[in-house]
Image 1 (spheres, rainbow, N blue to C red):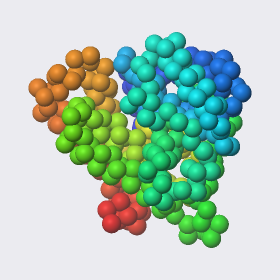
Image 2 (cartoon, one colour):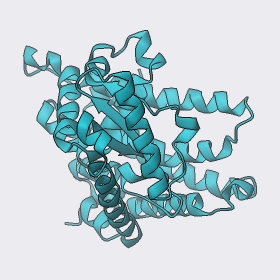
Image 3 (cartoon, rainbow, N blue to C red):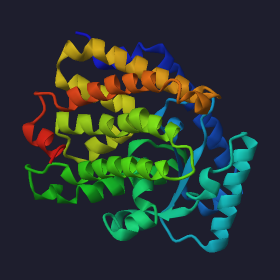
Image 4 (cartoon, rainbow, N blue to C red):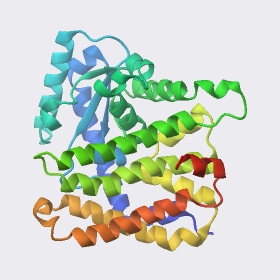
Length: 317
């Protein structure tokens, strides 16, 4: 029987990207390990974006985030920020995005305690928490990184002690909230002066895959324990997707899945193109057609009759 995992493993272009990402993460991790500021303060650092997803390309940036399990003093923070800047320079990455907007030290206790509060959004805790769970890989202090994952998932699963009827609705709802937040942010960008077309393409491919490729195995396999979600978070979004597809026990989607992977690889090639900003308007129809087929495949998987009807209803209502 052909598995979706084997189809992914046999898709050479994406496997090469994953190998490149792993090598680059090793190189970046070495820089953080050599940093006196990080060795002294000892927070954890994780990367997100294409490095975290394991689909790196020639133009991939370094998006790194710092989490501490204690309060970090102001001067310590400045040393950490300066060290991040030096690491970007050493590895010839562009400076931290948006003039260092997300370059701050996030506290683990805040990321748990403020879930759902107004400060969850205003202090960017929600976004960082979602990136940590959905598309991250550790760069420094892996034990603390693992603790962050466990503590945050345990917070979402705190009602699981009530019995066997527990379903992970809390965490799924936050994943869906993140998707809708990204969609709203895109609409805001359209009214500004920033280039928005590239954001739209990311939304239609990598963002959609990251979120719904994670939701699928949760609802297919009815994952209801902290350990199951931790194991899922250690996989890339594509690996989570194939876990969900394999759980459907239906080979009829196999050929469409191969096309899905081809569309995703084409998206990554578009991202790698240095002239993509100029070309986006002229290849709009090609992108939209690929995006429709891409999202259509995810919809068919998420709406599969082998998934509990309560979960399928929850995705809509």
